[in-house]
Length: 216
Length: 216
DNA sequence: GTCTATATCTCGATAGAC
DNA sequence: GTCTATCGAGATATAGAC
Image (cartoon, rainbow over all chains, first blue to last red; front, side, top):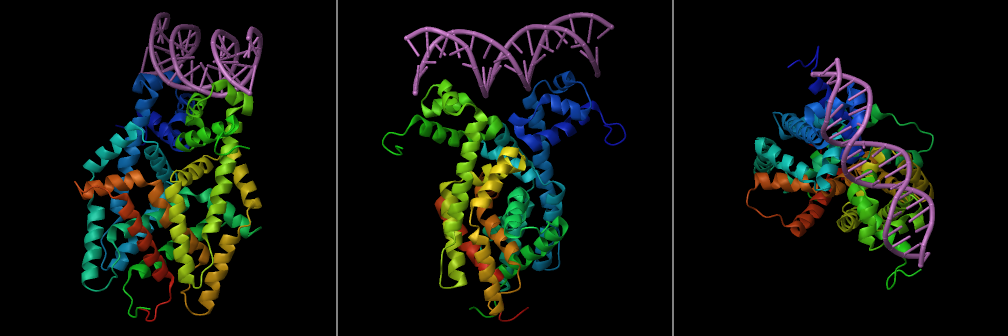
């Protein structure tokens, strides 16, 4: 399979379809647009995949498994809980910056409750090793028993981490407009904002979890 | 205008359209389905609103202004910063529990970058008093100057609060599947989960923001 | 495998009777 | 105001030549 120099037509179609479906969803996407972006004749979409839904299912599967496994990888090793958490937040934000439309796409398709999406999610999770949540839970429990962390539920904490990282990318247009409306005239510096976001998430979440020396 | 006993056809249409658009978005919604759910002939949709986009714009406007003003209201008064924050988290989660599809709908429609959605957002923000972000920023700054809170940026903190609260509702199917895959057999008790979520968000975010007696 | 031409279908919108 | 019938655009999908 040629991946770089001379991608197959099938590959070209899947790349273009990924872009279009992520931007517009299943019902909003047009076969003609996919063909145009792939630089091929529309008929070939049907020759290779027969139906629009088939292409869509392929994209959904690819996006799911790629995204989940990348999140798994983001959870690296570290000498301390603080290091692991910081690394995870950093890598997750990098991953999101590179794929800003993915979370919204996945959430949307699943909320719509399509049988295709749910099927693929279940299958993806079955193939996934799911080491991340288990390792995080184990790590937090261990640190709690050592008396370093407060009594927060690890699953709930994980959801808070994900929400804190993902929300901005899903709601970026809203955030921007609200910022513009409370700070008129000030241009939005995305790079600086994301750098600040990274630090702020870690500060709030790490010190939120860490056990207090003095309880107030 | 009859609101309860004998709603006008216009009202029936808008209610049905709200449901359908929130579930499926603009391109996924079908006029026939709106008519069916409203219990009304399809032609009447066009008689009252002429086009699908007109109905959509009405729904978008209603949802935006209702949701934003309810969030504003959620930010009540309180004797302390802790009380204000807890109240805000509680009310926001209640609002989300009552309207679980709204955030995803708004985020999705804005990300798609439709001119309609962006227009309505800008107009809504212009009409909104936007007291919430300003009040929060002021409150946090004041507490920081009094030495009660650490040096976290108030805007970043607000985004973290929103993300922590909203994420679960947007990603509920994913969260459920992941939970099921790491805790097989255990049924999901939504009520209990949300009660725990409420407490956990407050614990992490409040103590994350609050100034440490002892810095580690 | 690839193209042109066209069939088929879905859906928003309208005409016109009542 | 409400209904039946239908139009017409635009989209997916297929036939058939090359």
